[in-house]
Length: 196
Image (tube, rainbow, N blue to C red; front, side, top):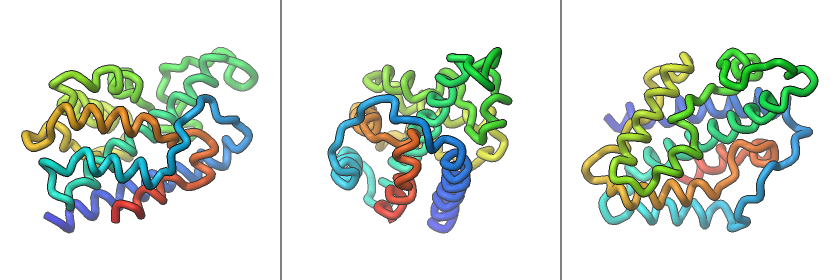
């Protein structure tokens, strides 16, 4: 079982890394679209793990936190490309922001509406937030064949307090992951290393 969890974490990391490299090459000139808190990443990651300490074994932190960070990363990347499609300028004139082929063409994972970070963060205080996150992971897998069977669905577990999960979602929401600046700094690689 440990090997399966490690393999799943490595697969997620490799998928993220490949996607990161593809997107990084095409989006270097985009400016950061929103301000994020400037607290050091390590401090934010420590807080994330600290939110889980009371009920979750230390070896399990990374599966929950990495799953959320992956979800935030692909949602940020999606939202950035969504904004370009919605603006409809230049090569994106007439593009449909809800057409998943528009994202595949740019090596961006398509994120269904109920799986987007903004939606999940707005629902973070609900007692069923764990189920909503698991459903979001299922929806993302259904729309993106390379992710089929890879994403963790561990958020509706009995030992994961919904209030703590909601606080964790809010905390991860403060970490810039999918914007051009964060991709160029390899924030995802740094997060993965931190949790090893």
